[in-house]
Amino acid sequence: MNLARTRRWAPVAALALSLCVIAGLSRMALHKPEPAFVAPPQPSPTVPVIAKTTPAPKVAQPASKNLATITYTFVPGGFPADPAPADTAALTEGLHPARKLPLYDAPGGKPRAFLPPEISGVPVTVPIVDREPGWVAVLVPSVNRRIGWLPAGGWVSRPLRDQLILRRDRHELAWLHDGVRKESWTVTTGSSQTPTPLGRTFVLGRTGTHGEVYAGLDALVLGAVPDDREAVAPGLRDAHTGIHSWYRASAFGRSISNGCIRVPKDGQRALLASLAPGTPVVVVA
Image: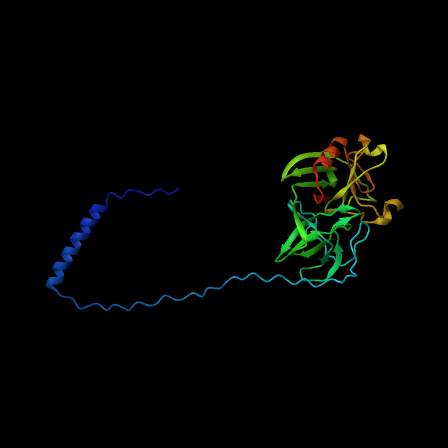
């Protein structure tokens, strides 16, 4: 911090200035000088002001009524790749479509599919990952590492306060709330033939399980699906990646599942009690 100094020499300077003025006036009376030329004031140059304008939002092209709808097992092609699939920065806002909405491949681009308000009876909330004037980009469900664009209107904003980060090499699942790490667990991940898909995804919903192997707890269903459907058992080729408990502790810390994330019982209880649909999940190598 700069502090102002008290200038105690100010009266002395004023006195000196007075003496100079008086002496000068005396000399001027004795020797009258020629009048000095004073240049006329010049106008200040005018600096043009350039107004900053916000580009107008790109217009959404109408979608055909025959456009396909995203389902639990089907997503049409044409959606762009997620530009930051390994980004672990928190995604803090999601959206829920109030009705079936066309999902575009770019702002003002081509509609590729309808995003429904429900998938398999579960209300859909998708994380927002990017923005442009009048548009938002979201993670597309039922496909890996793809985004789609929605214009303003027809959807409801939802806050997202939780996040899961899976580090496959460490077999570690971390849970963050409002950016603060709450808990982490050593978990089971997919095998080398059926790896847990990398990239950003989200909690689509929850479902009941059958059999003691799941420790009697529901599973969280993610938006991600097997990268290679042919590598998994025929009965799982239309399935999504899930987060569920497991009855055998010896499985944790290993890569042996069909792609799902197996969590200790206490951890699964905590996640089921706390996570909302749309919660972002990031899987990194």
